[in-house]
Image 1 (cartoon, rainbow over the protein chains, first blue to last red):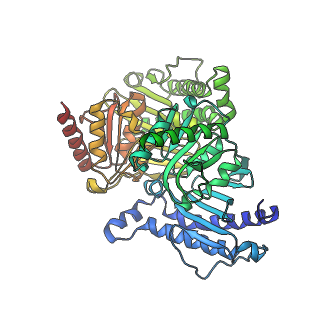
Image 2 (cartoon, each protein chain N blue to C red; image 1 turned 60 degrees about the vertical axis):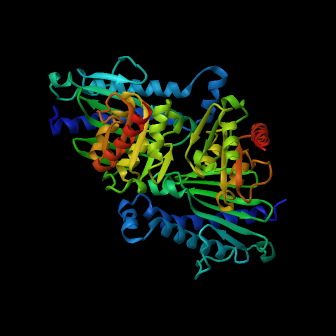
Image 3 (cartoon, rainbow over the protein chains, first blue to last red; image 1 turned 30 degrees about the horizontal axis):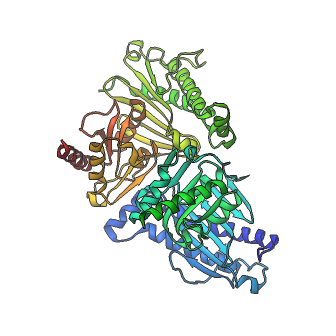
Length: 285
Length: 285
């Protein structure tokens, strides 16, 4: 049972929309700017890190203005500043104090650097047990993926459509995505990843957070990743759940803390993937 | 010396723009359509192959109407049909007969299937020695990359900007992209690929034809691929050249026939990559 009412959620959505719009005014002018990137080598100025930090500051200011009693966890360790001019939401301070914003201003920094429009700004709101609201914003393609309370939708250039994962199909017909084979850094996780790769029809690389959006849109059957931080994954959990998918650690435990994560289009496939991953793990120990 | 005048090129550009606009009316309605894709398993109807074939037919009709005496090479082996209603261009039939359209209606079919907006429609025009005009169209993001005669530009949602590759930087600072490590299918090509991957700062996966667009935009330093067909690469050659890059086979030979291809942001880097690839090849033989 969520501690937020549906009115609370709508107010939170408006606050998150505002925060993401503001963050995009920082990230977009730094995307695909070869001259600015060239500066990095010559002057030590890193425009991507700069954009990352500035965007997180903007998100922090907006989101903390909306819920002044909530906690905040960001990738860039920003600190409170002057704050945003928007008013706090009418949500009981005792409820607010149980909530934490979890933010990654630019998930997929390497995609960002190379000009690939598959990075995203991630905002999640958790109550310590579960993520109650999540957003993935890709401002260059103008796609905003939102999930809360069993619903997920995509707003694209003004239009909104519900998100829905794929129905079950056998492993041999499945498409799995992972950002890079290089993210599996131990021999055990490599073996576990290979056990999935060898069982499915197709493995695709690249995508970062956008892979979870493809899953929620019904384009792929699963995402399998490792070495994730809480701010890499929390915002995506309600989007995957809301679209009908399942997302856990490879052990089957909740994945709020990140680590090795598998997201599947449906519960039946998820069971099969967990079995594959756990069998491959047992074989090596 | 090109056999086409600059007036010829402008006329060809208009014909290609028209053909790509028409092809997009076939590809876009089939992109991100989970219901249509679900049909495939149940009925044997393959909407992606269908879109691929229909788009090639549209391209053939438009392009052959513009240059009736030219040749045509497409991925889908389409045949001449009723034709497009546009008039033939005012280009000498003797010149036309030396030209061939080379077309891939959906390059990156796997990206297309999964919903990733990194596939492209490719159109090149060669004179048997060189590709005189090339276009990569990504209709969902509304990006059209064009190259001819030492120029390259991107048209995005109505605006046009010139394309320019990165300046030289040492290998240890370079970003290299390849569609998937699985495209290197022999032990020799795997070893050659690893010799590059181990020498550079970062290797990114995914992208198909879009990787060459990132190169032309200055986002990455090189693309390295294998097992390419002529229709996978010809349209991209004038875009890479026009943006200031170099593109050849791994042997340094021209890459009109596809095969193992490397594209670099500048001549100095290209020399270094060719040396790496050839040394790794020599080591294994």
